[in-house]
View 1 (cartoon, helix red, strand yellow):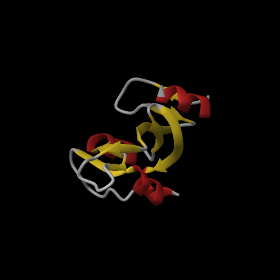
View 2 (cartoon, helix red, strand yellow):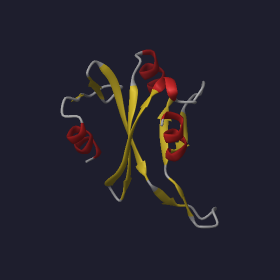
View 3 (cartoon, rainbow, N blue to C red):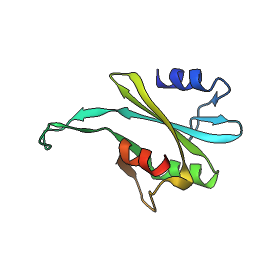
Length: 111
């Protein structure tokens, strides 16, 4: 569903099965999505901003190839926000495993 949304925005994108999701005009792309808000009882409002999960090996491969993330924020599967995040703009530094970052933080890094 999210890939269909990205395909509508970028008809020339080429999706494939591999470590990364796609290629767009020669640039490697990983599509990331998250919910706008999620339930979290540890917060006063019981809601928090959704998180984008970055995987270290995948991020390293995308960074070395000069790639970027296509980020889709949705509400119950309906896309609400889209932004592109070149890896050189992300302030992820070195990490191993999974690093989850609020989508609003990622957007601030790149917009």
